[in-house]
Every structure is written in structure tokens, then in C-alpha cells.
Image (cartoon, rainbow, N blue to C red; front, side, top):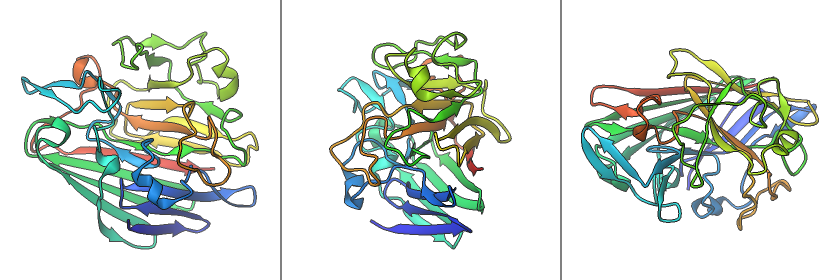
Length: 322
């Protein structure tokens, strides 16, 4: 497994070729530099953990009902890697469990690529994917994802870091803001029903900046849901979320061109594999994943995930630290 270190000022990150993974991300906080993502204690565990730590999820991130996708009039059966009934984050291996090629790297930037072959995990078309991590400044890490195909296919890429900005073992005391009035509620298999539901008066409402643990008391099933922040992909970066720890000594803002944001509270952690820094605990970190809406291929009113030959899929996300 190869790695690349990039930095700018007091901020630095380590990127793995396996899964194009953010292994660590240190930013200025509390008078020092603090790692704000969960890092596995043993690097070899990235090939075994199964929770997508820091990786790029794809070819189609999140869940697809019954693994079935009608693409260009043809029904494709995708790999069923979640309890044998659901397609999750690209299948049995997906992009998060593949070795990417490190194409270029310098002090501030790492560029990686992966060629997903026609038929991989059931998807049609050869898909060339690129991922560029770049420190735009000491206070901003950008992630640019692109994809091109030689046959009509579906693409929905997502970054999958687990964030913990504080010094404690969990994120329940973190304050989270998501500027969205709607979620895409799910059924018992965590598949969107197709509804766009207003969050007003519920624990899903984070528009004013709420403490995660306090909102969770209103949502006993926890958080693993997509927020429909915008109606369609954006031409320019817009805010998706802001989160800060109980110490309130650093804030992470997530800006993206994506219309949706998956918020997962880490309720099914810990794993058998160990997490560094004493964060091996339930709710040890939370995921904030810019994306198109889950199961979009089966909901015509969701932003499209179809990619045609000659088109370029492009997503840009920035992690801004203040």
C-alpha cells in the first residue's frame, strides 16, 4: 500500500492509494494541529475494515434497491453486498477497496486515478475516474472527482471520511448545521421511499446548528439519511454542512457542487479493527458525504446519476477549516 503526504502551513494529510483514502487530516485547532478524521491504528486494516474509512465510494455510492438499475432501457443487476439484498457503495469491492494509481504528487497535491472495467460489480461501460486532493490554503482542502465512460452508465461518487473534530471519544457533543429543510426518508432497508420530507419539528432539523446528541433523543433510530439540500448539481460551490466540537476551537465547513449530503452518526461503530487516538467507540466519528440522492436511478424525480459517453462527471468539494 502506497501513501502520499501533502501539506500547507500547519495543515497536512496522508492519502493512500488503496481506495484513494484520506488516512489522516491534521488542521490547526486548540493551539496545535489535530487529526479531525478517524484513522485506523494499523494501516493494513484498511483492506479489512468494511466501513469505507476515508475512501472514495463508487461507482454508485449509497444504496440501490435490490441492486437493480435500468440504464438506457436495459435492466442491470448490480452486486448485492449488503445482507444479500442491497447494493451499497459500489458492490463487493467498489472503488473504496481498489488500488488507485498515483498519477502525480507534489507538496500540496495528490492526483489518483482508477479504471473501472465494463461489467465490474454489474455496471456497464469502462469508466475512468480521477481524484485530486489539493490544499488550496492552510484552511482549505479541496477534492475534485471526475469520471468519463464509453457506454451509458450511472455514477455517484462520495467522500467517506469519519469526522471527529474534538479531543473526546465521540461526536455526540458536536454542533452540526445542515442548511436543508428536506430529507429523503428511508424504509427498513435504508432505501429512499421517494418522498421529500420536511424536517421541521423533528430531530432531523439541523438548520440552526444543533447538538447531535440532543437531536438524537428525538430520533431513536439514529442518523443515516440523505439531506436534499439542493434540487440539482451545482455549477459552483455551495454550503452543505458545518460542524464543530464541544471544545469549539475549530469548525469544519463542507462546500460542494453536489445537491445531497448523507449524514451518518457512526452508531454502528466500533469495528473489530482498532481506531487510533482513543476514538474506538460507538459514535466515534460521523460521516458527512456530498452526493447525488441515494437510489436515484429508481426515482425519476431525483437528480440524475446517468453518465453518457462524451459527458464528464465532475464533483468538487472543499473542506474549509476555521
